Image 1 (cartoon, rainbow, N blue to C red):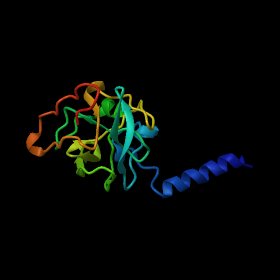
Image 2 (cartoon, rainbow, N blue to C red; image 1 turned 180 degrees about the horizontal axis):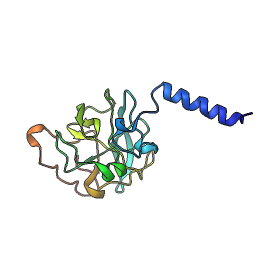
Image 3 (tube, rainbow, N blue to C red; image 1 turned 180 degrees about the vertical axis):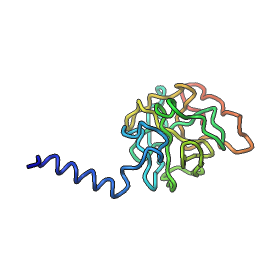
Image 4 (cartoon, rainbow, N blue to C red; image 1 turned 90 degrees about the vertical axis):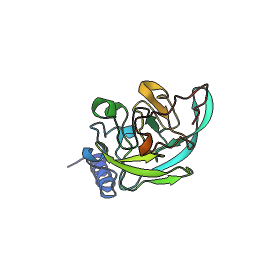
Length: 174
């Protein structure tokens, strides 16, 4: 006879898979998809705003549906993400074929690239950081990644190859 907890856990996993909570690694572009911050998006992903302490300053930032801070990578262009391989395992791309925004007025779209259907905000591909938890920003300025804010300067195809200036002072500058 099987243990009731194992049966219940199996039923729960089947229910999550049925509603799209478990997706193939190819959808997220990373083999680290079992961690909460690297979890690939299901059919839709929400980008919303939330308050956070960033470098000692209270800021309104963009977060994913799980409350994880979202980042942009300065070397990226509007047409290409340069975050792949081991870098993508540490900085999982935010992917979804049908993203939605809540509280953010910038342009949310999808870039079809090496990471699949990667969500962009004002042209910037978005990422989470494997070291973060909901409400915690620990990746600011690490490896050329910066927290995305609702006022993130648009990155257009014509500005490809031109990285936005690094944030100045205690705030983000975006």
